[in-house]
Length: 112
Length: 116
Image (cartoon, rainbow over the protein chains, first blue to last red):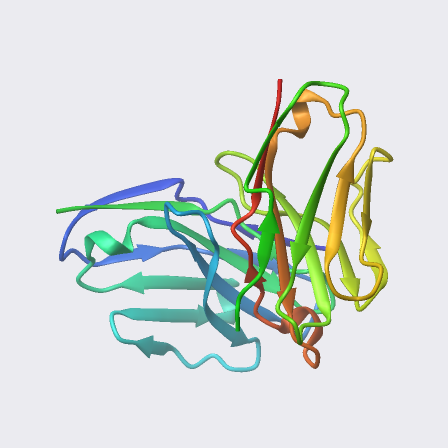
């Protein structure tokens, strides 16, 4: 009923580079929510952002920005001027009438 | 907000033994979820509770797995006759009332199970 594809398994960048994490989702719901979570090396998943399917406005929060395109079922996450502390696994998820479904995650490694 | 608490953090057991994990959600959260995460994978849904009622179980959850949330507060996940394939991180998450599956989840640190 729901599926999230994060095609990038691992991304390695040098500090201060910009990086985009891709997320493509599938759902039968007409109303749904999209999420991004961060899992640092310590292990606890931390919620970053939620986006309603009716709201296609891009969102910026500091160095983080999200690009939601319903036409391509994508919800991409960009980190500008990456920092070593951004190193983590990032998960995209979709929720709605179904239990939240997560992608396999993208491991981001930011080198100093 | 003391966060979601899971115990134990690590559990090593021999194949065939039973194990039980505990999750204490954020106090005002009525929804509680169990997920399982293996290396290189995202969290896979196992089951969820709304208050004390177990409303959904994944097909991943074999008969050896059982979960309870007796008073709508803490929850336990028991695995009977453990198998090596059960080795994983077991994650608990909770969310507040009002938005159903659209609420952001608050995760605990997880319980890492190793079956030898």
